[in-house]
Image (cartoon, rainbow, N blue to C red; front, side, top):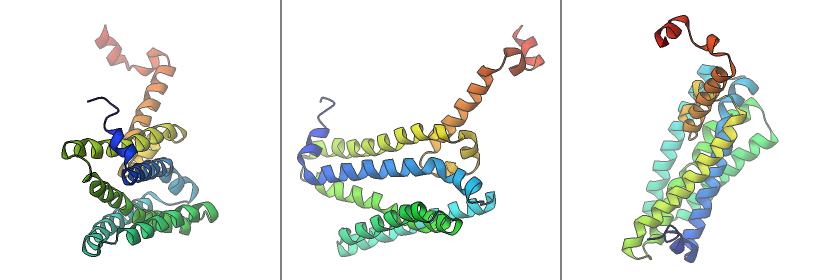
Length: 216
C-alpha cells in the first residue's frame, strides 16, 4: 500500500473530507490557544496559581461531562447536527469573547465553560467519520480512521511546537499547562531553554567542581 492510499477514500467521500477539514481546523485552533493559556492567566489576567489550577479542574470536569452527555444524547436521538451546532457555537463565543472583551471574567468564562463545552465536537467528528467509513471496504476502514487521527495530531502538534517558542516553556510546564493538549511541546520548549542556557555559558560555569574532577 502506498502512502497516498489512505487519503484516496477521504478525497473521494465528501463526508470524510468534511471530517478531515474539521479535525485539522479544530487541532489548529486548540494548538493556537493552548500555549498561551497559562501565561495569559497568570501574567495578564492576574490569576494566582491556585485560581488557575481551579480553572483547569473546572474545565476538565465540564469537558468530560459534556462529551459524555452529548455522546449519550446523540446516540439516543440520532441528532448530531444540533449537538455539533451547540459545540461550535460555544467555541465561537469563547473565542470571540476573548477577542472583543479581554478581561478576567471573560477569560474565566471562556476557559472554564465555553471552550471546554466545545471540546465535545471532537467525539462527534469521529463518530461522523466512523459512520462515513462504513461505506468503504472493510479492509480500508482502519487506515482511513488512522489517517484522520494523524491529520488532527499533525495540526495540533506542529502548530503547538511553532507557537510555544513565544512563551516560556518552563513557565508553561510548571504553571499547569501540562493538562492541555500541547503539553509535550511545552516540556520540549522547557528542555530547549535549559539546553540553550547551558550551551551559551562557558563550560567551566555550567559544570560544578565535583563533575569536572569526575570527568578527569
